[in-house]
Image 1 (cartoon, each protein chain N blue to C red):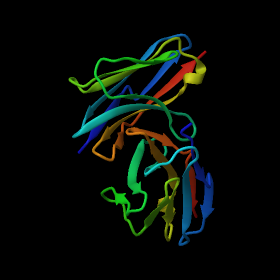
Image 2: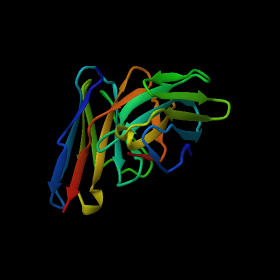
Image 3: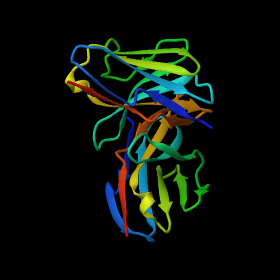
Image 4: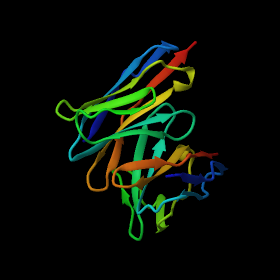
Length: 114
Length: 111
């Protein structure tokens, strides 16, 4: 149980385009999902908390107009990187909260912006 | 600002050795401490600890939390090459249980 999927696993796009990443909880409902970013050999940095049916809560320094989050159902949250630039290239990981405390992670999406 | 510090940053051991990984934290509104194992992709869940002094165990891995001294340890006994990974400690805080991650300990187990 507690499986989280992410799609796509890898994406390459041109600078200026937008990229959408999906995060799904497959066998449980998640009112809260989280989006993280991880640079090589660094730890996970929380970008935003995604709440089903309401606006996402962004961490300090994360532009909400650049990283659009939609949590339209109890099993799906999406992150759209708008007008992507090479500095947005990174590993993006989502997690879904299962129960009160534990977060289970998706397999991640590697984004490369050319 | 919430802070989670892990030590050592990296470690190389021989197969069969026992290792202890450390995690200390300074946070407001502590709720839980979690350990994850990260190999090539996203972290996989190992343990969640909320109470002091109660050891959690899964096979060769075990972990314990000390809420007075604000730290946790993760023990791995009889290490195997498959234990090679980055081990992440994360502390959950606030009503949303946001996780703040440490930088991780990179463990390499050699033959």
